[in-house]
Length: 130
Image 1 (spheres, rainbow, N blue to C red):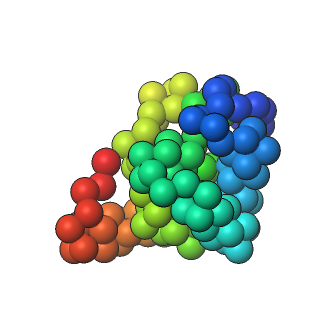
Image 2 (image 1 turned 180 degrees about the vertical axis):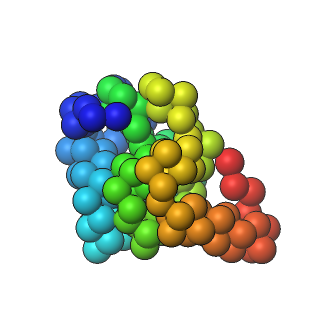
Image 3 (image 1 turned 90 degrees about the horizontal axis):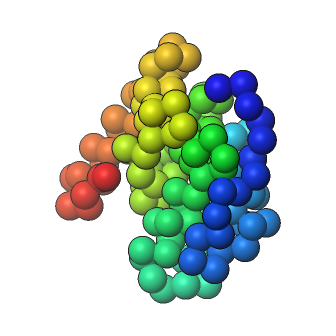
């Protein structure tokens, strides 16, 4: 990866660049309070679940989503919260890698376990995990 440029590739259905940038950075650095706060803001601002999912899956120029950053940096609680909020676990970045792939290449077994745990929790509540 190596690229730290978090310029937003596109504005997702009205989300401000600042909001998306803040979510990417909070996920990247494991700031769980900011992740929860930013996700909550999305839920309160817009009632459309589609918009929320697009915001959670916003990406930078490397096509890293907040979930990619959280996985790359071993942010276990952030990984769980993002998945439970609807983040796409199958999103591919510019290296054709999913968040799980990034965790595997970094040897982050705890992250892999967190992804599996959150995905299982979502499936047990009858929510499809993409």
